[in-house]
Length: 294
Ligand code: PLP
Image 1 (cartoon, helix red, strand yellow):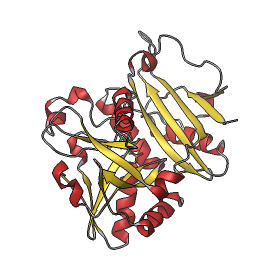
Image 2: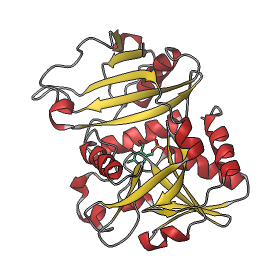
Image 3: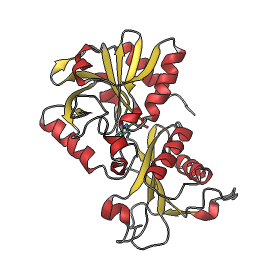
């Protein structure tokens, strides 16, 4: 039986000097109803979230996830989260995780319709098994995201750099990728540039240089990509952000989809054209990603 843990959070103001948050947390039965029908996260997807990988009870890169939660909240004009409180909630959830890989989710919703405050909660559960994707890799197709590269600056209300709860489009793209016989997708802009995958960042290798599409193109700044770039730079590789044209994808020496729970999945084919892999490098990346990271 899959295990799950859930903690409701009574959000305190970002600037509050409070240091002990015990009385703001309520552990709830994860199988029992916990949200009211007026909840705007379920009605409109109006909220933000984070998924944090946990290895043997250690929550990975918590600071990077909390920073992105705060960034998403600012873009969505949600009350600034108290990061000390959220960090304390992550620790409580991590203590509920057993050995092996788990996932902690942080959710901050605009709250109940006409209600006074946001709704916030944290869950923990066993992670999906990505061992096959990590070793055998994934075939991807490119899918048009439907807007040009410069749209984030022109239309900030699209909330493109925020990790919002509105993932229906991302899930539809994954279904379309599977209909086309692939495992995953890479979004491209209408003017031919590469963005990200529906639930992962893209990293390309050209010789000894690793690049990823620049986050100012309205994509999420991946915590896994950030951490991997730090690791690769320490190993002597060049790393950087680029505007990547879709037409340049076949010239990559290798490519990966990376995210907090999947870690690094090598891409074996893009739109049916095979891509060489580097099994030893991928294994070393995943060994790093599975080691305790802060
Ligand atoms: N891009 C999107 C759209 C995502 O949903 C995710 C993660 O779920 C990522 C990138 C990778 O982010 P991270 O490495 O922080 O998990």
